[in-house]
Length: 172
Image 1 (tube, helix red, strand yellow):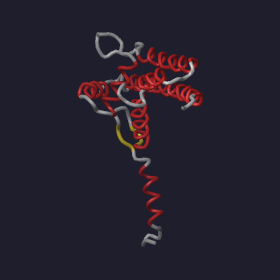
Image 2 (tube, one colour):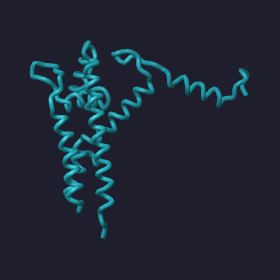
Image 3 (cartoon, one colour):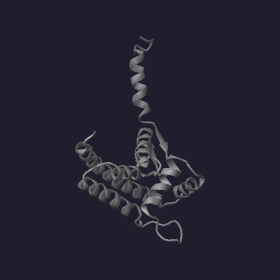
Image 4 (cartoon, helix red, strand yellow):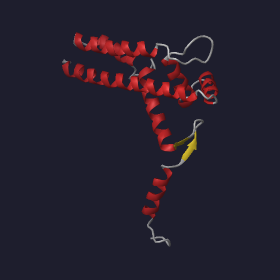
């Protein structure tokens, strides 16, 4: 016990509880560090499904479906989910940042993924930083949330398709 009458494990628990409520300014208001960390983890994990070179990307899964003896039904189901996702990502949002026309949902996802979270290139980072200072930034954040929801639902549906396809495979 310490001189304050609390054990070190009690103090550690109190620090842990209080640290989860630390708040930081993120350009649109205050947000908890825990929420920011969770959002970053979600977006960076979902990114793995959209990057062509990743082993778990949807493009890599499509190649597996083409090379493995899965049922035609599973192949068609996967292709439908993958095509629907690509159609959504490549469709125009209602938001624009130049006179070139509206951004696609894929472009908005890239601005956040590579501008806020992954920091791969200066272009996305600069675009993100420029957007953060505008009063329209919450609209872009809403669009990101919508995109993440569609992406997560698609991945969930593909997970179910993958489970059925794997269960149907016979290994020699």
